[in-house]
Image 1: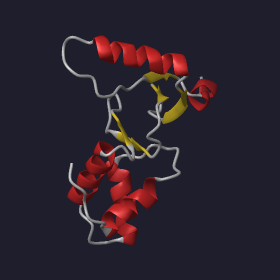
Image 2 (image 1 turned 90 degrees about the vertical axis):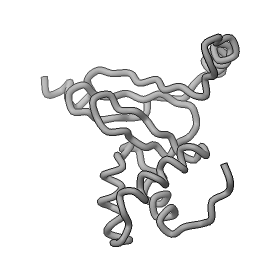
Image 3 (image 1 turned 135 degrees about the horizontal axis):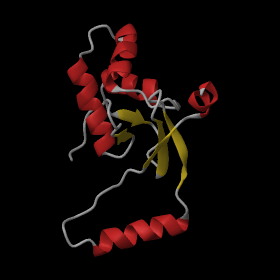
Length: 132
């Protein structure tokens, strides 16, 4: 992909996303961005999130039963989704052995080309578990 010029909107989205651990949706980022940049559109949010994800600055996380979430950590790590409250959180990083296993699957896959993967564990988060 060709190099994109710097944009104020993209920088706002980066600032809103980086350092967060709550994995916001595009809608959440849009509501927050409007406070800083009132004329920003939802389309601008989606285009910039897609671009940042495509160039590997962020991760787009498909959320089972809900809107995609966005993670400022592009490094390989797993996620956990609570089946009760829908919360999404980081679980941990891959070990060297996990990375080698994933690469060997990618290299031996005969049905196409694997360019990435997503691992999402599910269950009850500690808050929902305590409520039961």
